[in-house]
Length: 198
Ligand SMILES: [Zn+2]
Image (cartoon, rainbow, N blue to C red):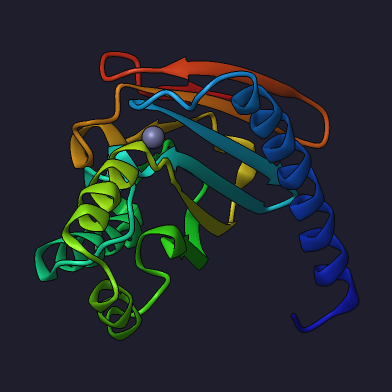
């Protein structure tokens, strides 16, 4: 961050996203998270757009336990690359928006390294391994992705179309919340209705 003004702007947006996330988290705590359903928070402030996706890992990688096999680790890496391919995920109606920052958090899926895992497994008996299998099925984890854009002409920006349903076929519904300095709105997006209108 180069100037104080930039820092304050980013900071306040992060706060808004944090509160939105907390609201979603509180909703989530009332029940289990629903596979197929994701949350998308969009903050538009000045010429900046910050987007946060929070989704069950099931929608992105097809499992929610920590990746341990080569195949699972490969799947996580492929999913990460797909999440980085923002042009396939977000289509702005206009505004000449340029991606300035991306953060993809897959830590729940690939946090501990494989060596640790191997050492752990050596202490397990066969019955313990069965236990682990049950645990894997009952584990739930989420993927969080942040996208920051700088736009040239926000006055013309009227909508955002989502490509998630094509890139990640397990996604069925995205609950979108958008907020600007003067307005806010919400939309339940689906494969047949994937455009948010501001
Ligand atoms: Zn789950």
